[in-house]
Structure formats: C-alpha cells, structure tokens
Image (cartoon, rainbow, N blue to C red; front, side, top):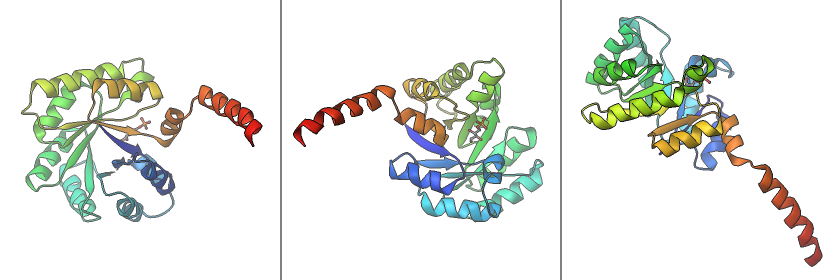
Length: 214
Ligand code: E4P
C-alpha cells in the first residue's frame, strides 16, 4: 500500500516524507492556489523533494489543450503524472497520452461506470473521491470497494486506484483493510492518525512515575 500526501505545501510534504509517508503527492488547482508562487515552480519544488509520482492537474477542459498542457506539465520533471478530469474530452486525452507514454490519473471519479471508462481509455490511475460522496449522503467506501472488485475481476483493466478526498482516520483504516493500492491523505488526517489520547495519558503517567528514579 502506498501513501501519498494530498497537498501542495512543501513543508507538509517534507514532514510526511521524513516519516516515510510520502510515496507520492497529489495536487489539484485548489491545493496549488493555496500556495505562494507560480504553478509550475510549485510543482518543480515538490518534484525535487519527492522521488515518487507527483500528480499535477491540467486546467484546460478541451481535448487539444488538455493534451498540449499535459505535454508541458510532463516536462516539469520525470516523476510528474498528469491529472485529467473525468469528462469526454478527458478520456480522449488519456488515450492519446498513453500512446505517448505519459502516465495519467483520471480525477473526479464518482461512479463505478466512470472508473470503467477511465480504465478502458488507458488511465494509469483512477481517482475516486470518497469524502465528497459522503458529503452528499452517498457511500464513498462502497464505491471504492466496487471499483476494487471490478479491477480484480478484470485484470485486463490495468489501472491502480488512488483513494482521494479522504477526510477521516476511519476512511484510512477501512481503505487499508480493503487493500486499496494507494491512499492520498491530507496532513490533517495524517496527524489525526498519529495521535491518541490514551498515548498522551500513558506518557504523562510514565513521566510522572519516572521522577522517582531521577
Ligand atoms: C486528490 O487528488 C484530490 O484532488 C483531493 O483528495 C480532493 O480532496 P477534497 O475533496 O477534500 O477537496
């Protein structure tokens, strides 16, 4: 199981990387907009920190410009993966980019049908968004499980799943139990996974008792 950091913030990426929690990084236009600097410069900085895949999203929505933009983004570094939105022209772009050896991540997947189309188009990664489904009273984990079953039962669909829009430690534990290939996790959730109130209470007690020997 690979863990990616779901952020464009270099300090957060460095912190996760020091703990072995940055097998890759996912960004999106919203995450990059939170940082200071130029779009490609921000990506370049991340690619220098991380040896694994760094996912960068195209901003265009039509086939020609998506392909053009993807080729430009791919020049930023060898470890760039192009995120393409799950739309008709996006699928066309995925197919064209695959034939040129450029890896893609089809993002904004909200149904198993979309995942099948993206995998057939040749996506390297499928990126279903859990949290946003949960937000509208749908079941994100159920979708992940269905997509995983489809890929297992159809080995010709050669794509990996990146579970995205992860909002809680419970999402992480459920996805890991399911055996999902890759989880992209925001720093806030990584921190929540690290902490436990009983650990804090235990340390406080041990520290107090250790005073006897000091
Ligand atoms: C990552 O690739 C996605 O863009 C990200 O996980 C979306 O998360 P959000 O739904 O919390 O914005």
